[in-house]
Figure 1 (tube, helix red, strand yellow):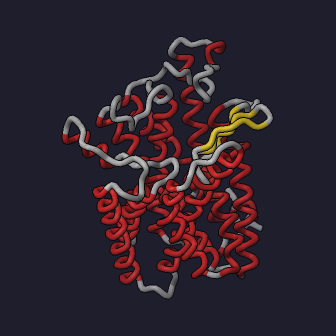
Figure 2 (figure 1 turned 30 degrees about the vertical axis):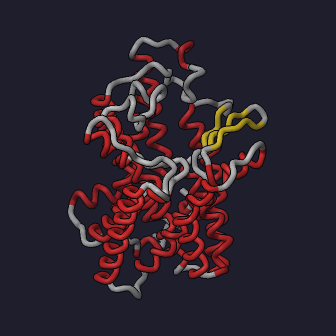
Length: 394
C-alpha cells in the first residue's frame, strides 16, 4: 500500500524545526569525537586544559540530547491522540524495544566499526527506547500520572546523590537506572552506558506532558505564551540553582583565574547523569525556541525541517558518514591498516593521538551537514508518500 500516511499531514512544524536544529548541532559534537586531535585524550570541559572555543563547541551540543528526548515525548503524546490506549501502548513498547536493540547492534557498530562487538555503546537512542518502554507501561495510568512521574524524576533525581554509594552489582544496577555512567564487562564485551534510564525517562515524560499544549484544543497564541513562560521559568531556575550552589548539580561552580573562565565554570554542569541544572539550562531555552519557531516560515525553515522529520535516519547515517570520512583521512595522513586498532580508542581508524584542529572540525561538520541534506530530503519524501508499517520505526 503506497498511500500517504494520514498522521503525517498534521505534524507540528515547530517541533520538526527545533529537532532539525539540534540534529545539525549534534553532528558538530560527533565530528569532534572522530576528528579533533584531543577528543580521545582530553576532556573539552576540563577547565584546566580546555580553551574557550573548545569548551563552547562542546557546551552548545549539550542542548541536543535533552531536547531530542523531550521532543520525543511531545511526539509520543501527539501520536497517542490518534490511537487507542492499547494501540499506543503496544506501539511505544515495540518502538522502544526496537530502539534499544538498534542502538546496541546497529548504531554501536557504525560508531566503532568493530564487527566483533568487543565494545558496545548504549547512548541516547538506548535512553529514548527505554523511555518509550516505560511510557508504554504507564500509558494506562493516564496523562496526570505520567506528568506527575515526569515532574518527580525531573526535579528529584538529584536526591539520589544524598544516598550512601552502593558497591558491587547493586552499584551497576543503580548506575544503569539512576546514577550512570556505567562501564562493565559481560561475556567479554565492554558495555558503555552513559545514559541512566530513569532521569532520561523523566525528561521524556515531561515532554509528553507538554505535548498537550500542541493539541487542537489549545489556541496557538496561548501555546506560544505558555511555552515562553515555562522556558523563562526553567532558565531562571537554572540561574538561581547554579548561583546558590546547593542543589541540582554535583559539580559546583567556582571563581577562576579570569572572568571568562569563571563564566565557563558556571556553565559547566553535569550531563552524565543529567543533573537538574543541566536539564533546566537546556530545556528552558528549548521551550523558548519552540515558542519562537511556532510562526517561523521561509527557505531556511524548510531546510532545517528536512533533518527534523527523519531523526533516526539522520542519526544513523550521519554517524556512518562521519566514520567513513574518518577512515579516508586516517589513510590520507599516512597511517596503515595495522594502525587502525588503538587500545586507547574505542573507534577503529581513530587512534588516540591523531586528529586535526578545531578549524578543520568545523569545516568537516559543515560538509557532513550538507552531504546529509539530499539523502534526508529523499527519505523524508519517501516516508510522506508511503505507508509501510516499518516506516514508523525508522
